Amino acid sequence: MAAAPVWSVDPRTGKQREQVAVEATAQEVDAAVRAAHEARGSLADRTVRAAFLRSAAEELEAAKDGLVETADAETALGPVRLTGELARTCYQLRAFADIVDEGAFLDVVINHPDDTATPPIPDLRRYKVPLGVVAVYSASNFPFAFSVAGGDTASALAAGCPVVVKAHPDHPALSEYVAKVLRRAAARHDIPEGVLGLVHGFEAGVELIKHPLVSAAGFTGSVRGGRALFDAAAARPVPIPFHGELGSLNPVVVTEAAAAERAEAIGAGLAGSMTLGVGQFCVKPGLVLAPAGAAGDALLKSLTDAVSDTDAGVLLDHRMRDNFVAGVAERAELPDVDSPVTPGAGGEHTVSAGFLTVPASRLAAEGEHDLLLEECFGPVTVVARYEDETEVKAVLSRLPGNLTATVQLSDEEAAGQGRGAELLQELTPLAGRVLVNGWPTGVAVAPAQHHGGPYPATTSTSTSVGGTAIERWLRPVVYQNAPEALLPAELRDENPLGLPRRFNGQLER
Image (cartoon, rainbow, N blue to C red; front, side, top):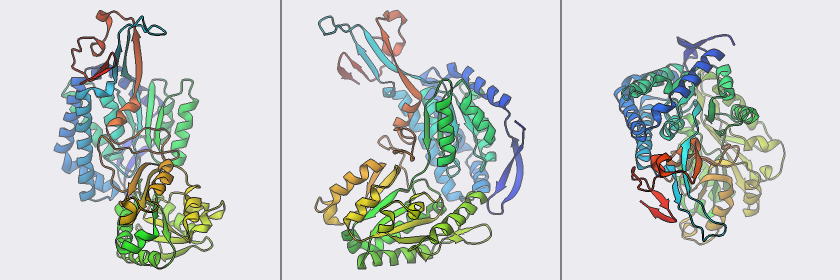
């Protein structure tokens, strides 16, 4: 594997800015993984882990100005957006520190022997232990929150798993900067810097998923790239869990009653959601089922006005820009597809937002219009105009898995009259998060959050956002008839660590 230079590139001009590193060789990937493996013991103490996560947040905040400047130079996402994303990343690190302190994620369950049961129950003590080294594949569109210090890394470290990150080529300088900051935080607690490895290059990513000391992987990116890594993880001599977020259309259903009641607000809200961040959010609404007729016409007028007022923007790199321009052009050429606001090239380095319309009947059965049911990364959405509920059901029945699904209801429908409850039942099998009268962009970092969904949205049933994301990097183990003196402190009767647990069938807090 040749060591090629890694350049920082300005997406506003497409020009190389500076050489950041070189692509990692197979030997360098091996060294990074082995260093992470050797660092496992430094994360064994939960108190140290929690302190490390909080220190990481502190160090990131202290370096905020330099981090945001570096991120903006490589992504063109803007200081306001990036400052908010960095704040979210720091909040997430602290949230996982609180989870580590609480200890409920260990799922401690203790059963004392019961000879009267059929069959008899021996002494059983169950909890969860870290899997080992986790490979993290950074995302392009969230250079902080889904990258080196993002949710996969934070949750893995919280679980007690060292991490090796495969940096995204769109922000290599930022990746190096963040890794340096996290290693500085680790040093404050005598944790070896190998606890967080960083490698660059496509081949390095392939070597990483194959490494025998890598125990699990987290990925955010394209269906094609994620599926290739998922298959590689399954094809290993010892397969490993692969938690991939691959692609999502994020359908929206607007009822006729909702359109009649608030067409202007729905159109404006849709425009804001589909163009947010130049349409580069994984939960961007990419397909909208809206009624034909006067109510739907009013919605489209509002959407047209709002999207027409949206400035052209810069995508994360020129490859994405080229794919967007080609993708919307191919879709616009399909029969019965119209472009009320034409999406495409906005300039030499920018793209213009727009949307397409099509009769929903064109999507109700397999055919050339299936292209409209595939995600198009960038500021575009497809509005499918339906004549009746039968067409809505037919289109929904053809959709793949999604991160989100949204329904816009009237006040009466939201109060339980009409098809509101039925629509929720139809959308639930399609997505991991179902919204009512809202928009999917904006993923709150909260204990109840679920950011995942049926394939191809994700390759597992887990979430990459929220407290339960830690569960991806743990496995249960049970000790049977082990003498008390040999048990880990988490499983001893006297509960010296004060953990939440289920003890002989009773929940203790």
